[in-house]
Length: 226
Ligand SMILES: NC(=O)c1ccc[n+]([C@@H]2O[C@H](COP(=O)([O-])OP(=O)(O)OC[C@H]3O[C@@H](n4cnc5c(N)ncnc54)[C@H](OP(=O)(O)O)[C@@H]3O)[C@@H](O)[C@H]2O)c1
Image 1 (tube, rainbow, N blue to C red):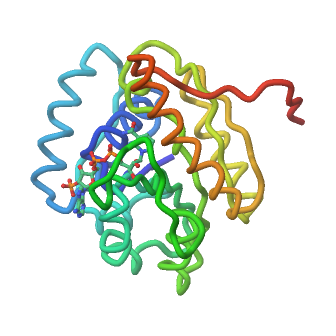
Image 2 (cartoon, rainbow, N blue to C red):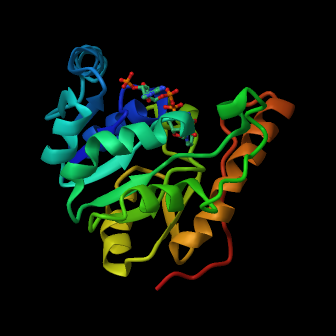
């Protein structure tokens, strides 16, 4: 699967890109600036040189959105709208997994606090911005910390809670996400469940700060998935 990571030069996007490339997927790292994407990819290919068949290329976000079969959005809340505006003509009916968390940092506050959005959640905001497309928006990776992702080759000790309105799209997303060792994906239901999923992240960040850790994660127990 060709995965395009929009805003893939940051810590969350690039580390997801590394994990998917190691899992054998074709990864496109997107950036506002093609040169920045190319530079990050060059560094990453050097870092992953002991792995066989790593497939990773860098492109401008718009080209990445066009080329990718499935999209992942990893930009800060403050960049969410402007980034989606630049790619919306290229999204079509693709799945777009949105990792955006509405942290208070967007308005100069604490990473351990949440800000309420008019749309209910960042993922619903993405769906609203893309409303004239057939994009299938899924909230995903909001609770998976980049410290866990970058701790290669250790498996990720965290579940990935997802939410979205299209069941077929979620099946595709789950199959893909679970290629990352250790991650178990939990389908929480319709997209509006992102309101709760996104709120867990500032709680985890606060716990990491309080207990001086980088690896705080989340496991849902006692659920028997079909
Ligand atoms: N970091 C984590 O542990 C973590 C965990 C769960 C969820 N998340 C969520 O994932 C998203 C990305 O997190 P991150 O830590 O990777 O963010 P980041 O490093 O701050 O930013 C990611 C990329 O977004 C682009 N960007 C930054 N500011 C921008 C602006 N003003 N306008 C347009 N593009 C801008 C940049 O790409 P270019 O300059 O290349 O365009 C940057 O490399 C956030 O919404 C965060 O809440 C993060």
